[in-house]
Amino acid sequence: MSHHDHDDHHHNDGHAHAHSHSHHHDHAPAEMSFPEKMIKLLDHWIKHNDEHAKTYKGWADQARQNHLGRAALLIEEAAAMNLAVNEKFEQARALVDKK
Image 1: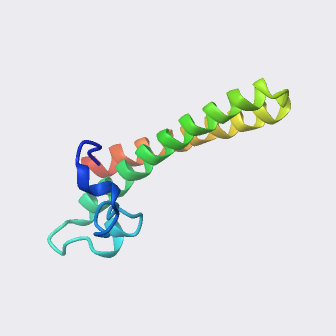
Image 2 (image 1 turned 45 degrees about the horizontal axis):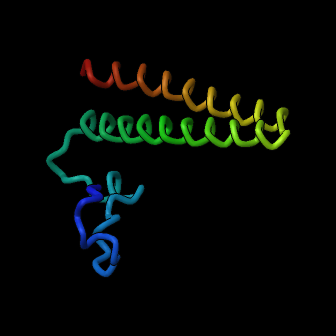
């Protein structure tokens, strides 16, 4: 998503944010092999989990600044779990990629 594209902040053509979660699996072109689909999906999930983990850590920092240290710890644990999930996805991706 390029932020220097002036038109996309008007949101009048629904395509600025067309990369919704459904679009990889519902409309994958028929010529895509199953391993290719899996790799695309896994890459997508990995990227999202990284983004979520960063968001969680940012909010954990804010929670800590607002004297919510125990809540911050739980949120940090959730961030770490997200990254642990990514390790599984990366292992799965490596197996699919060998096919």
